[in-house]
Length: 407
Ligand code: HEM
Image: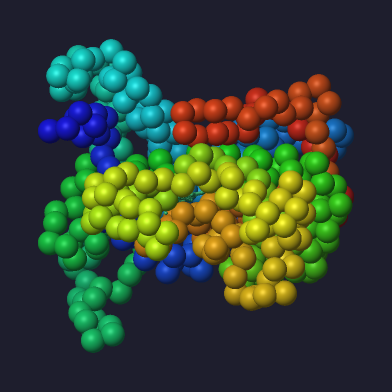
């Protein structure tokens, strides 16, 4: 066994085929139905995390954003039965342990002795503990879902025998996907697939959201226009029930989000691939078989051939491209030639539409209900590098104050 796979074996799994399939297919098919539950958990997160603030009040926005997205991801992954309880913090505990353990094992153990880490290394024990805990929490829900599936007669849908779906969450999608592949959906296997998606989702989206917020504070003109747009689409109603279609009408917000994504990058490299066959490009560049390739993410967004005047933060840049070139392209979540933010090809980020709708729900509540500005005493410091990842300053504070008319 190779050294790298020893570490993966003991610290956590690689992406599973089941996780890839449900993130690409079922999640995106279910998004229309998930907007309402997502809006509800965002409301809960604000009620819990936002202090009463009739006057300017200092808060840590990273905490607010991270709690909001954790609630959304937990609702989408483990459904209404489990989304309120321990899972809310468990996925964070798992991600912290699974990102720490491989480095500890590499540092402390000679490559020949890494297999021992499973038995003696506390950081690996932490990963395994959270794995077991996740599986145990899932077990009763999974068993109830299996019993429910077994007791309902399949219907013929699209020429194939299928069960009518009763639940839209990753537990259900994985259960059906495992069965379709003739595999047993054990609590551990389902927990592992959920964890691997959560690991891809949570820090990337929370960091992206925090940069967006800082950019918004730096561009009050954009903030005013986005607030107007939200009020126009919602008709100024605080109880407006957002749909994907209505979120799609927030075009200035969408363009702003894409511009922020262009100038900040959580992943420093993207489109990591291995050449399965040797390949020679027209200009003679030869890629031998088994070569590993990756592309730098940030310089691509700063290429002036793709984005003229790239150093200027122009929040309507992508809105303009949509009206000028192709209305169906250049949305926040579009994979197109002017960005590598979502990767490319069949492995392009399958969670980008979830990220798009989640970020809009989080931001529209903040912008329409609160005035916000930098906290002069705790302004954001420089971005932090963490290996091949970069994140904004999560210790910075902002000032918030309730506005009287809200959406
Ligand atoms: C703003 C937030 C996000 C960013 C910037 C982002 C970015 C990326 C990038 C660059 C890749 C690699 C694509 C490639 O190799 O071509 C990727 C893969 C992936 N992302 Fe995201 N992502 C985000 C949010 C999410 C969310 C919310 C989910 C949850 C479903 C998710 C799930 C995944 C998965 C499962 C993969 C692996 C896909 C595969 O290997 O086929 N991501 N993401």
